[in-house]
Image (tube, rainbow, N blue to C red; front, side, top):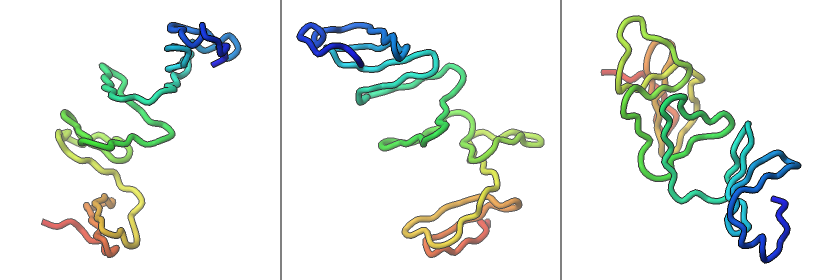
Length: 136
């Protein structure tokens, strides 16, 4: 942010409009906290606790991952879906893990395991790389 480093700017708290970049910034004690324009918001400081609520529209990560570092990833209503969303022929499930067929894993997955969908069955892979159908 192009504020001059003066004693006065170090005490500045409020909004700053950067006419060159065309962005509006929130400033606290001369330090930019975040800035935004009509296209995006850039947060300059670490976030201690964030709760995100979306009444509609959802949350999308287009170029990165959504990472949970503590706690659980929870779906409290609806389903967890992997892959493209397709409608069910009759009854849509609730509280289900729904997987589209994708690239099958191959090779060892040391100290781990996984489940995935083929075009006809649900399959599993174990640590040594053995893949087999999930059976009853």
